[in-house]
Image (cartoon, rainbow, N blue to C red; front, side, top):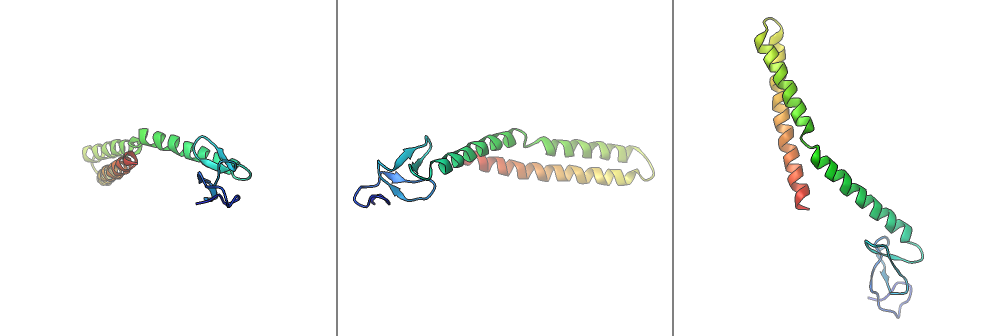
Length: 121
């Protein structure tokens, strides 16, 4: 493959933004990929910044993944205990508590599947 701009020069890589072959004279190393020196450097740096922020967000999500299932499970447990210890309309609270606990288990399962998929990448 030859350079997109200089047809007689061999390409040393592909621009991360426009995917064109670039020679040594046309390339700019951005630290995490090559870019066309003339036009694509800012776009590639922006793309690298997005990738870095995405990695940080994913790490934050992984640390806090079980926060909501824990909250729903504990809330469900409180509703369930309230429902079975009181008489009258408290049976509805027991049903809601059981529903919250089931939701917490399902949500924790979904989160664990997501976390295992993130770890494999």
